[in-house]
Image (cartoon, rainbow, N blue to C red):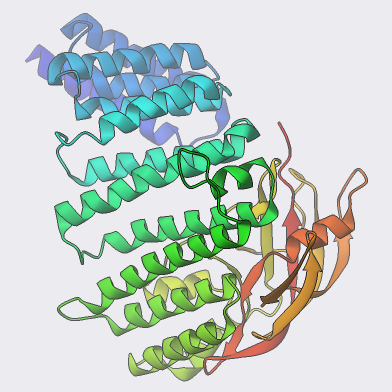
Length: 449
């Protein structure tokens, strides 16, 4: 009875901590004390190696991280992983969330050397054939992939190529695991596939710009053989297109296909063609998407409102439900401002794949930036000299003009505009046909630590 009462009371404390996490930073020390008390009481009642310590230790570590106590957080996460192995075995899947938290803890304090070492070990554990394939394993694989993408932005720039490549591996494993657990045409697979589409885009843009990461991504064998930048970019285009076609196939092969989902998947395919400057394929794709939405019973005016304003590509979030897609679009808002947030100071040419729109046109005081006006000419081919090369592009910003900026030091306006010329946009569409349009864009820098 005593043990039951203690567990009940500790669950109340646990719930208090969870809700308190949504409070202001001033409550951090209170949350830390609650978490510490919870762990101490459990140890006193059940011992230091009891399985019931796992979640409280993880919560205690979270509170320690919130107060900057990274070393102590590491100790508690290590203890949780040890308890999991003690009870469930050396390769226990129950230890995976604690190992992932340890990687994040290393990253939070800037120790990417140890983070990379643990990520390699964790990948080996996650890829073991003996693992039970379930939703949790797939989530862990995707989380590891995301941590490698974080490494692209935060680790030493010499490691960018490594993290790009390493991010693909667990994501691909997640696809294989999902197909085995759920079936080839399961509706949970498209968002995972779309993450791979985004990764192909990021790598293609990195190759396009050049530099050490570009050289790393152009290598395709252990012997050091390399592709040209053009061939590498084409490879990323076809890989991304393949994943998008797979998404389209999944929606088309349901017992009762959702015509809206099929039509919107056509839109994503057309977006890919725009990004890689294939205007005819893009026109056909947008026309098929419009026709499909009409046949699905969506009102023509609603469709045109949805496509009334340009969208920066690729979109970060995969939305296949009409209501969700509409909610994310700046419908009937001619003043909507596109937002380009640099991903990292070392990767200023890459956009952080976060919210694409701002509700206002103000530059946040947490970064430096500029407001640009520009125009788009549908999907007409535009020949330009940019970043040291002559190229033909579609749906790229024209007539760029700085309206205002908040740069506190001198900046190279020409270089910034060259970066923006590498951005592609889904054009304004009326009845599925690309249109010319004027727009504004908020460009915000990523400040170095």
